Image 1 (cartoon, rainbow, N blue to C red):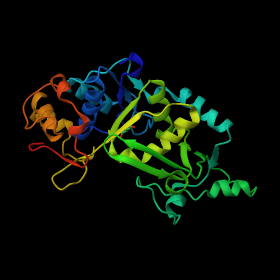
Image 2: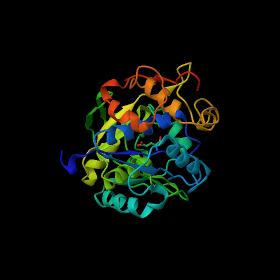
Image 3: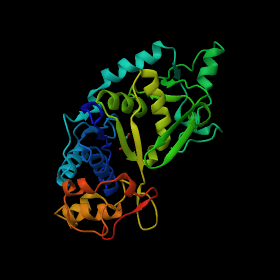
Image 4: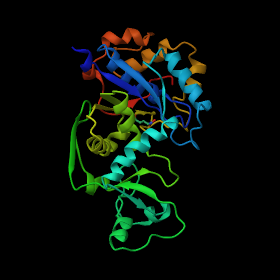
Length: 310
Ligand code: GLU
């Protein structure tokens, strides 16, 4: 395989709380997938929202420490989204110059009061109120700072996910025009993630399948900006005993508790490896020992239950 085709994966956590085992499982899979085929894996801290994720705040320090504790080492410099506003601005301007961006003055309450159906991530499908008003030549409401939306065409975007198989979404009917810059000037995740993955040479995105429905939007931005599409693997979420997904806010699988109970990472790595089907039953091991055992064919497609004892 030429150097050019080697996988470049990434782990891109948002440090809005202490990591939980599900996040670590995702990091481990991204790392194993790229490294087991001689590739690289980069780390990016998605701290765009300074109010929720202060730069180098406590959660980020724990996050870096949890990853090192697991033995997950990343290639190159860590990328901090909070330090990259000028980069996002350049790509945003390209789309604006192409006439694809328009200001939206709708408040959160107005958006949620609209009777439009909601997207799977809870965001209402935008009814293009501000676009239609501008087209009628009417003035926007005074005294409000607008968010910026990307206008989408009536087009299906399809891709084949490594784990979830074929997935298709119609941009206009299932996503609608979406925010690429918030009203407070912060660039949105959908834009930042595309720019950063492309500029880091990432060609394989491994992440939780709660982000599956974001992928067509991101693929559309990749197309507009002339970036190639990475391969995608959306992994099942780790769930608690009742089948609920783990949350950073609740205690289950929280790394603080995991590390109190297990000062040594080897049994934790073994328990995750067994839950993922990489080994037949839990045993103590390192992430390096898992490299020759890694195979996407073994990874479950549905929810994975938190291993016993966590
Ligand atoms: N920052 C996102 C999260 O922590 C993940 C983004 C991605 O992997 O594309 O949920």
